[in-house]
Amino acid sequence: MEVFGILLSLFLLMFFAYRGYSVILFAPVFALLAAVSQGLSPMPAYTELFMAKAVVYVKSFFPIFILGAVFGKIMEETGLAKAIAYRILQAVGKERSILSIVIAGGVLTYGGVSLFVVVFAIYPFAAAMFKEAGIPKRLIPGCIVLGACTYTMDALPGTPQIQNIIPTSFFGTTVYAAPILGIIGGILIFLGGMYYLEWRNKTAKARGEAYGENHINEPTDIDVKDMPDWRLAIIPLLAVLIVNYVMSNVFTWDPNILAPFIAMNLPLTVSDVKNVAAIWALIISVVIGIVLAVAIGYRNLPAGGLAKALNAGAIGSLLAIMNTASEVGYGNVIAMLPGFKSIANALLSIHIGGTPLVSEGVTVTTLAAITGSASGGMSIALDLMAKDWLIWANSIGMSPDVLHRVAAMASGGLDSMPHNGVVITLLAICGLTHKQSYPDIFALVVIKTLVAFIVIAIHLATGIL
Image 1 (cartoon, rainbow, N blue to C red):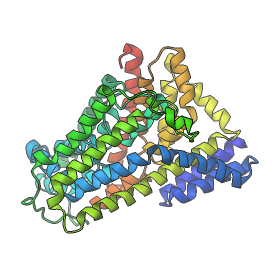
Image 2 (image 1 turned 90 degrees about the vertical axis):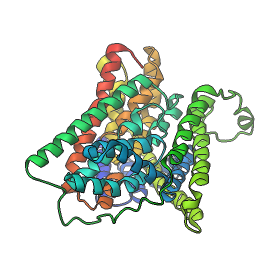
Image 3 (image 1 turned 135 degrees about the vertical axis):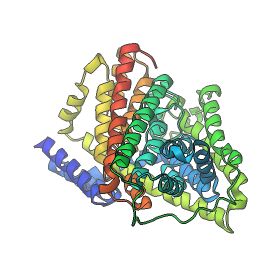
Image 4 (image 1 turned 30 degrees about the horizontal axis):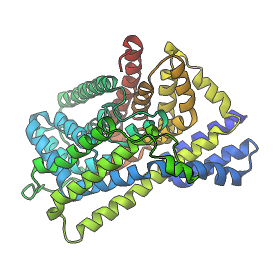
């Protein structure tokens, strides 16, 4: 009965999220439903557990959300993101339209541009190229997902996306954790996804299917005359990557830097610099990226455009972090319930390979699928079980870097369920339906999920990081 209450709560959360209801509102509702089903008082469960954990998450990661959103909005409003995308599509060529879209999405996300901005920057070009090349429009979302939501989101070392940042605070790692495994995983995802998309295009052409007619949200003609120089546009992206690398791998943080704040008896999020250094490094690098983007693209903004872009980025970040924080609060309520102990024990009892990696991969990707959020599912999983996995890894001499990379990659797989916010937004922008394009999106995320477990197998067989 205790486990049933948790499973019912999970089902209802997933169902309501799929139906379009906000998890900010309904995550606490279903968390309290589970708590009451096991005899806990709802009000302290809400104020002292749900809200306490949600606030800690906001405290830890809000700077990353707001700065990332502002950086993406500045890159969008100044036309810098579109200039980079246009140059990549020109260089690769319309005869390789699918490859062009995938590479453009990858470059932008690896440089720190948010997934939503990538969609707006790439879609108009993708529609024009696919129409000219006779490629079905329904494949555009899959191409964008492969480029922006897979290998550069959480596999390649150094990516500044939130999915690669969250594990650092739990494992004391950097965004460059397990670089060889990350590169191998990224290559496998890229090759597998490209093979699938090209096969789908070839199959469509064999049936005589082309771009299609009577589509909605078709972009107007693209004016490329006043676009910024792509060589200048790419500077902010390079700055984010370079500064982040220097602050993560070259610069040495003073291990006693927190001492004065500890003496103030402040409720610190972390007690060790290594658990927050990666977040500090990214804050510094993205701030520099924002300053450079504004300096380079300022003249492309309309009157009052800078304030509009900054405000839009800041406001947009609130929805993203509150969604994730609500999911984290929900997960922590569930974790404290007696019925969860049997679920946690079952997950920790997965001893395939004699390491915590399969247990971690299964837990993270399952919770990401339930919540429809890579960052939300991973945050819940790590908040609940990271200490156990780390103790297990230390007992067998396994580097926490591997735990970091597996958690990141597993989060960005089955998170892209039909109720995922990025999926819904992507289809709306492209003017397509779930029926038309979701099968291809799902196939790509299945490939992505399988690669996460292939990476585990490679590490177990070779020991490489």
